[in-house]
Image (tube, rainbow, N blue to C red):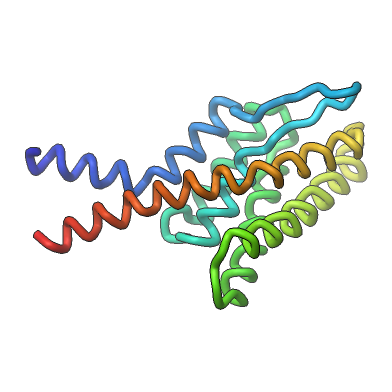
Length: 176
């Protein structure tokens, strides 16, 4: 591979978490499910922000997280700044978890993710109800957060695989 193509490939691999986050928020890739008159959303953005803020915060900066939240608000027709606040609150919680964690494993991350999205979902609900007077069905919000919690291990494995690709690429670069 040429030097130019190698650099482009390396930059693409290392910025993959950012590209995935922006792809999800720009395209609005949240799955909207209607089940027994409850309309709930599986929020992939929460999974992406939580995982990469916890494992590799250098790949996903706070400015990018804030900007992704603004884009998500525009795409989802929410009041500007709500998603940014949610994502930054989620990042703040993951910083606390990262500083307190000695051993990283899927179960601990999964439980931490559940607690974090419950806090973020509660803050989101309170702000949308009290300040903006937007009617939200609480059961739909909880159901969406629970299903997002259930699919976290699948994305955990995918993101660990992506992180290993980045690590292999960096090790190849060091060995040359």
